[in-house]
Image 1: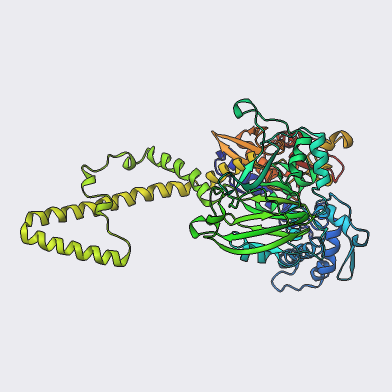
Image 2: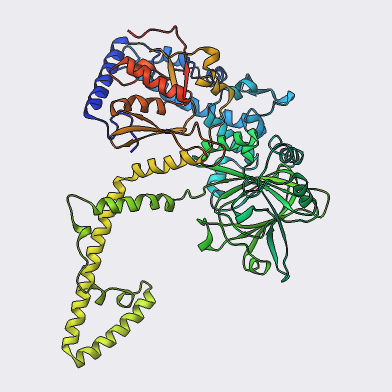
Amino acid sequence: MMLSNHAPTGMSRAAKKRAQKKQKKERERKERSNLKEKTSDETHASVDDPGIPAAKRKLQSELNPLEDKKKHAKIDDDPSGEKDVKNIADIESDETNEKVDDMVLEVVSKLNPAQILLRTKLDEDKTMAKIGSEEIDLSDLLQEISSKERARCLLQSILGSSVTIKQFYEKYWEREPLLVNQQSDPNRLNGFLSLEGIRKLTKSQCMAYGKDLNVTRYEQDHEGVKRRHTLDQTGKGGDDFVIADHKDLWSNYDNGCTIRLLCPHQHSEDVHALLSTLELEWGCMVGANAYLTPPGAFQGFSPHYDDVCAFVLQLEGKKHWKVYRPKISERLPRVSSKDYTEDEIKDFELVLDVILEKGDLLYMPRGWIHQACTLPCNDHSLHLTVSIMQQWSWVDYLELLLPVALQAAASSETSTSLREGLPRNFLDYMGVVHDQPDDPEELKSASKSRDLMREATESEDPEKKRLQNEKDRKRLLFLDEAKKRIMRVSKEAFSMVDAACDEIGKRFLSDRLPPALTPAELSLTVENKAEVGRAIFPNTMCRLVRPGIARLAIEDGKAVLYHCIDNSLAFHEAPLSPLEFEMDDAPAVEALLTTVEPHWVMVKDLIHDDIEDKVEIVKALYDEGILATLQAEKPDRIP
């Protein structure tokens, strides 16, 4: 179960005492210090600390000069003017930060996605932006924004200017498809993949059918029905992957086949950066496929729906898309559909019939049927489909939680109710034939029929009436007993909600990509240790190098840290390698994992009795590559 901020669940009694003692000392020290510019949480950076980048400080000073407010504030019940002024400053600072975030989003999201990801340079006429009376260098701002801000700006850039993120989540997310035409800036999605780039890739690297790519074509079969035909070659027995011959591959493409790249992020750092950054926006695994189709009204796939929400980014050329509304029972499906035929697709409502051109976007929730083909002109089509929310629904979470809760309730040491035997001969009065219908009309009809039968029974045999009443009584008793046991399992499940979140969190860490760290992030990690010779001191400042890349769980009396920093670009190629700590280390580890940009925590401020243990914990996480460190002051030594 995930630890809480102050008294972590599962923490040893001694560790709790140390945490309380540490907190008491912190309160006493703050009362004695009486420093006006300290924040309410000393583990977090103040406005003037290295945690707040220069460009943002510039925006903050432009928006809200707090120092003047502090000097002139008058508080009647506090002659010093510090306590209440400090609270006002905190509130105004929070409001200012929100305004800064909105301003950053507005300015940065106007850039192209590849520029936001620092994969391509800014246009010469877009290096500066004016906010209020201030000129902000966008190059500096891009280096300084947090990774979560970058993810939010990236999504807004992908969505374009016609819809805000708030509008997208409220109106379209998992509800309706969204078409974004961006012909005013057709090059906005440049910098990820291209036809020529894919040609060079397939020539320079070994690409295996079924693993790295597929070759498909949608055409008539011998019965005259259009179906998808896959031209992938397979090895002996059908299990071995066959390396695609470059000439054969492109000969098939020239003859109308679609080439689908299954894992483009493995061959493109730009795509990897895109997916890794978007994971921060959605908090779930993000994948991608790329589809290259030749000109000439060719189609690679049959009409179908997917078990993922899809963002179709049209990178090159044009493609004709048709999107159909799903049946209610097929909305947000857990598995992809079969391939539909042209006759079957007539039963669905066509809601979009559009041409996607370079720079356009199409979003489709899970379950929306679609098909696409190139135009009968000279334009090929290359699009990147970014996919999310696969096996990431409430039912997936409950499938993880409920079996464990049932087992825990069944093995209870305080109650045997779930282990008690079922009532004798309960099948005589339970089952569909004994059930009362839910529908009012059916219930009325069934009740009338039952009354007629009972009247006949009463007139014939009072004993039958007695037996029927006895069955009704037993049925009600059974339903009541079943409800009690279901509620017991539900209560057990509710107590395990956090533990189940830790389990699905570990699954996410195992499934997701390794983070594509920016140069600024890498410069603060162990990757740059050889250059800067960084050591860990009591006043070294630390934080998780990127939010969400590590998680702490309690397992068998140990604090276990899982992270994805060593994950492979290939799915599940490298298993998780968790770090194990003693329970009294848990508060310090938790503080490190929950301190994220722009904040820092000093090694000496971690909750632990021994400064040497604090340093060793930080060294372990730093050497693992998941911590960023900064030496803002002259290093102090361990006493």
